[in-house]
Image 1 (cartoon, rainbow, N blue to C red):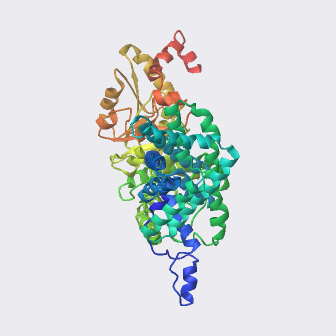
Image 2: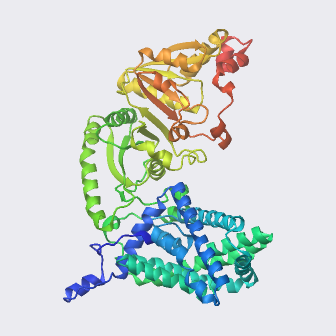
Image 3: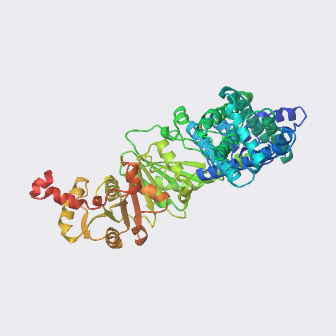
Length: 622
């Protein structure tokens, strides 16, 4: 929350008025506009990386707190001789929100917009943030209105006053509502700005109180209060809320938004110097490209991490690039080694190892510069192990560091930015990627993967004896390519396994598997066909294997990983390393959610039906 920034001394490195005053022998007792702006952007950086659940429930709490303002304003106005007495208590709900650090939509017209103006967050990210906060505010305000309407809190006189607030707003012309709301938006955004400049809680409290006192005294409108009033009127008087929402709440929403954004763009942004962000986390910032800024993840990335040493990559179309995101360079050397082996099977194989460091969500501006340098230096030292592994293989190996509050989602961002052919990542329930469950696990369901993904459960990653179960499909094709590469560079012994439903299908299963192997250059592999349940058959066949390679059948691999519910329990039933592969496909959202039909698990049956009555030569030609 913008108002939650603690008391801090001025950050180092900015072109501040305090610095100039100090040169003249006078120490300024207030922050310069550059320093206030730095605080705004640093706090917004923490907010836009917050999870949906965190944002929504903080906004819900803020919306419900607005009920306090509505309650006191109506109650005191109904019992006092003058309206002025009720006005004096109007700011109380806003004080709860700002001092308590909740998310209020009108305050979010300043910090996230500042971050977006600096091209550190994309426009879609800003809109997403606004929608989550606004919906939370409306749900909270609506719940408060329900409590007031049916909780017996208002007497008849107070209820009539409360309904009068909404009736007054509905009767006001839309143009007048818009401009009154725009001034209210200016006031709220100004409160946020001054809160970042204030040095103590008493000053902030006084500013909040006086500023929000101006809203009822000036007959202005705040969108969350207006929404709560409309919901209350609809519940108590049975008024149709739809016209009121369109003719009253919507103009207020637009006015509040424009007023707050106007303060950022015209007043605050352009009064700062060109060096306003040259401190701490933003010293060597890589801003979003114009396409990324406008389209977000659809064009690459939607957010610039705290630390990002990934250089802009010009893709060589003849090269084969493998991206290896790792959370711990000490323990994930096996994944790096496997990536180098796979890359060395290509004429221009390249490996890009990215150390993804989980960032704390609350770095102070004073500490960010030192922490940035320390984290980058330590990461570079740890990545020396990866560079040594790359030197032992005939590949080009690059290393980078990214410090970000996100983890699993950052892997997708890196893949879209660097356009690799393959992402190879380790997986462990105790590792960094397990925090994906706190991010957006459904994002993978609704988006096509940017490239091939290979996820390794590292139990030594010995590629001497590799078992590849297959039922066909693009994911198995990826496994076949990886197995063929390991056969070439590591002399791996490859065994192919196909499981049929019953023993009668075994001959057809063997014919299917031999055809599949020949088409993929694995005709020298050992062929095994088993009948019965798939998972026990795989576990039995993997007894003597050092590596098991599985394709992402049914829902898809990555969507299940982020939900910590892999579709094959066999992963925990075997002792060898496991590789899970998923290749980009055009599966529908329904297929990813509910899985493929069961008949796809037994393609041998379709093969048998297709080739029935044909000679072996005809089967091959077919």
